[in-house]
Length: 366
Image (cartoon, rainbow, N blue to C red; front, side, top):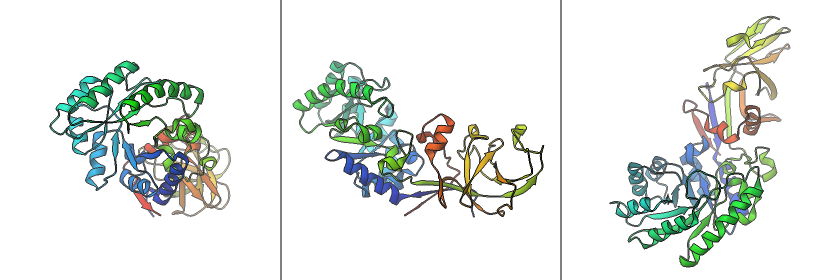
C-alpha cells in the first residue's frame, strides 16, 4: 500500500505507437515525449515508442534531449522549441535536430563550435501564431541559408496545426498554405522531410501525414479530440491510484474539507484519500469528480486540499481503511478517463496527465 502511485503500462504505449505507425504509413512516426512523456516518464515512453514502430522522437527543450541521449537513446531526436544560445549548445551536443525560422539563428548554428553536422528543420507559421515566420519568402531564405552553410544539413520543413482537434477546416487551410512552400523547397533539396500532422491530424486528416507525423497524446492512449480513446483503438497507459487512509461516519449537518463545501444531508461514511492538488488532483475538481472504490464510482466531496481529498462512500457498510482507490484508470467494470477529468475541468487530457506531480512515483510495467 502506497500513498499515491502512477502505474504506466509501457505495453499500451508500444501498442498505441504500433497503431499510429500503421495509420500513418508510409509516413514515419515521430513520438513526442516532451514534458516527461506527458507525465508518463520520458525514457520509458521513448523506449516503448521505438519498440512500437516510431523511428523518431521529439521533445520541447534541449535538456529533455540531453537526458534521453545520456540514457542511451540513439534514435533521431527533434527539439521543437525555441533555443537560447546556451540551450543550443546542449541540443547540438546531444546530436538533436533543431528548428530554425530566422537567418540569424541559422548563422549561429553554422558558427557554433558543435555545429558541424547539425541537422536543421525550418518552420513556417501557417496559422498557429507562435514560433515560425508567417512569411514564406523569409522561411525559404532561412532554408537556403541552412543548405548553403558549410557543415549544416537542411533536414526538414515543418508547420504546426492550431485546430486539428476541433476545426479541421482551418487545419486544411494551414496545410494548403504550407504544402506549396514545402514542395518547392523539396524540389530543390530532395530528401527533405515535410511534417505537419499532430495526433488529431494523423487520425483525422489523412492528407496531412506527408513524410513524418508527430504524435504525442495518442501515443499515451488518450483521445486528441477529448472524447474516448476507444474510437481510435487506443489504450490509456496511465493509472493513478491511492487508498482509503481513514473512514468515518458523519451525521447530517457535519462537513468535510476546507470551507465546508460539502455538508452531509443524511448519515453517510466519508473516506479520506491521501493525495491532493500537490499531486496533480486539481482543486477545481472539488465536488465534481468520481473515484473508484471497490469497483464502483463514488463522488469526490468537499474541497480538494494540498495533500488530501474526501469521498462519499454512502450510508451502507463502508469499505475498510486500506481499500485501494483508483482516481484515473480501471477498477472492476468501471473506469475513469483523463478525458472525463478534462471535460469537468474545461481543459484537455494533456493537462491532466502532465499535472501529475513528481512526488507521485511512476511504476512502469507491461
